[in-house]
Image 1: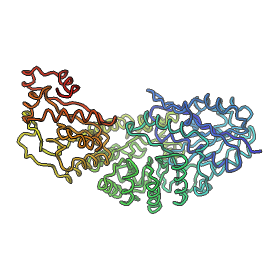
Image 2 (image 1 turned 90 degrees about the vertical axis):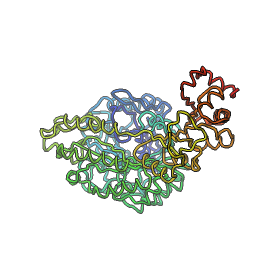
Image 3 (image 1 turned 30 degrees about the vertical axis):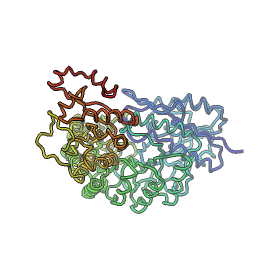
Image 4 (image 1 turned 180 degrees about the vertical axis):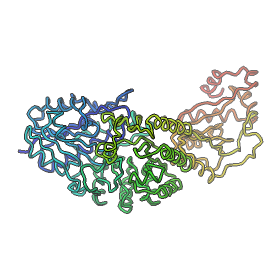
Length: 635
């Protein structure tokens, strides 16, 4: 008879500032579940992130993610499990005793009192690992019978088969034993993908940076494991005396992606990897596979700048939103001490290529290392601003944090520099509270530097760009701002150049104005180009005269714009045309407005622009009277 086992992926209660990707933790659970199933066990997955009640709640001081433990135990409690494996992620903070972790394990023990209880890291690299002592974990939480650490796929079945109540065994999985090509496809079929996707959308709406973008059904994947580099602040190679980097073959990646797309319904793949593009040729093949399956993708941990090629970028432009790289420091001296093994010249080259190819970019920076001076930290912040100004790359800066298990933590401990470090508030250190307070670089000074940088960054944000496509116009308004400028069309190539530049600099909205923008011969193509470049809001300010033709109005509304502002300057033909100085303009504008109202998709917003002058007062103009005219068809 098959051993009955439950893989339990519990809910999280986090500080309001958290990094890494707690919403993707299901990957570790279903990857280990697939291994256990392949080993002949009867496996169920109780996943807090794929329930009808899975929530993503953001409060002032905390974030609640996932369904309540009571919902998990009620749904799966009747399952007569011999073994329960609890996925103990870094977000449960196993390195410090805490109430939430205690509540999770107590609830698991109460729901399955006769089952053996394993605490397993289910770690899959691509995120921070927090080192802890397995024996101490069991002392803190007596419900646990054994612990399996690190990348657990190679050891989890052995641990489950050998489990004895109260054994106190600690299994440590060697990274070299976890070979991506030998692993089964993660068992996404054991959870409700419908509820999982609903939760992911909720999470993006609550915590995401692009909450207004349409959600794509997203599944995480790790086609590589580990990292060959040894940055002092990183703990992504846990338990390894020697760093072991492993990658799945392109053939196996294709098989997995086909299943993700065709069987699991994924539209987007989130690659949770530390060094996805280390092998340039392999990475090119992976990108080609993603594109061939009509999938989108994201690499949230970033790419190695010195391994990015122009061929990569040509595909990435089509299948991802932004490309991240990690410079970590703008100071060459600090970079050497970090062990990043990256030249800023290589990074500059990559950023130049991204700008030339029209690929939006982000760059990670870290300040406040225990060996860094204020001057060196300032060099990094200045570098971050220059990179933004020069290439439009959005800087992502945080404080150096000594994650337990990292070289930086060990070094800081030896030097007695952990006096203000709070292990139980680890993620707060990344974003808001420096972990080091040194006489030569006080924590308050570091906080002040970051505050000034973030304020300077916010002040430099560019939200909208206004593009005057042409100074030609079918009206000749008495108040026109064009003045005596030459009535001619702007160069399409020049306009496109600036659309690309301002998009790289962070502009999310574009307003096409004039003159009368619809008179530009390349009007439709330029609106479409703005949409392709990723502008979220595309407005066209028009007199709508061309839209009096129903076909022209239909093409206008389907061009890619998201809103239209129509200029009408009076409630009668006489008043409007006294302003426009063009006979017949009132009737055509009203007809264009009616076509917009009749034909526009729901996603297109529509509003009226009216200029009030002395003429308006003399003719007793009011917006209410103008509204009656538009509703009545201009009569």
